[in-house]
Length: 60
Image (tube, rainbow, N blue to C red; front, side, top):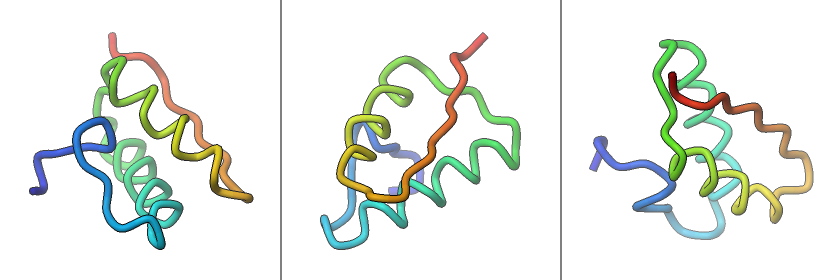
């Protein structure tokens, strides 16, 4: 399932915050594009993460 993203699959709720942080870090580290669905899904899930600070840019 490595080809899925937060718009199509999320792990168990207990690890949402960690997963989102690692997913965003991976996107930034490798300079990967983010489509609209990939941008919106993490932001909606991050509302439940008390220390979330996500910065996702739109795909070119």
